[in-house]
Image 1: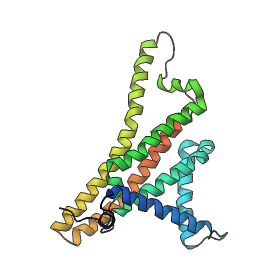
Image 2: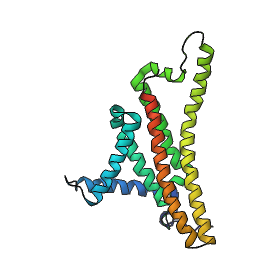
Image 3: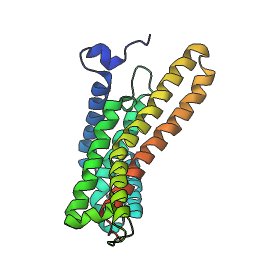
Length: 225
C-alpha cells in the first residue's frame, strides 16, 4: 500500500488530486504576482525562463490557429501548458502526487476546452456553424450523406473531451505506478532511468493536450468549405 503524500497527511479530508491542483494554482499565481513586479527590459533569471515558455506558447497558438485567433487564444493555451506541465512534474517529486493522474482532474480541463470550442464556433459563424458538421457535399441529392456526416461529426466531437482526459490521465497514472513498482524492485538504478522517461512523458503529454486544443479551436473558427 502506498504511503500518504505530504499534502494528504496535512489535509486528510481533501483528495490528493484536489490539494495538489490547489498547490499548482498557488505556485503559478504566486509566480505571476512575483514576476509582475520584477519585469525588466533586459530579462534575466526567472523572467528569461518564463519568456521562453511564453514565446513557445504564442508561436504554437499562432502557427496552428493563425495569427488573428492565435493571439486571442494564447492566454488559454499558455495557461493549460503551464498548469498541466507543473501538475505532471509534481508526480516526479517524492512525497508528491501528480493531479493529472486522476480522471476528475483531466476531465475538468477537457470539458471547458470542449465547451470553448463550440462557444467560439457559434460566436464566429452563428447559425452557419452547423455547416462544419455536414461534410463537404451539400446538395439535395447528398442529403442522406449530410445526415450521416452530421451524426458522425456529433459523435466525433462528443468523444473529444473523453480522449483528451483519458489520454493524459492514463499516461500519468501509468508513469506513477511504474515508478512505484520499480522503486520497490530495483532501488536507484532503474527508477532513475524511469524518472528521465517520466520527465519526457510529462512534457510530451502537456504539449499534446495544448496541440489538440489548438487544433479543435482552429477547426471551430475556420470557415467551413
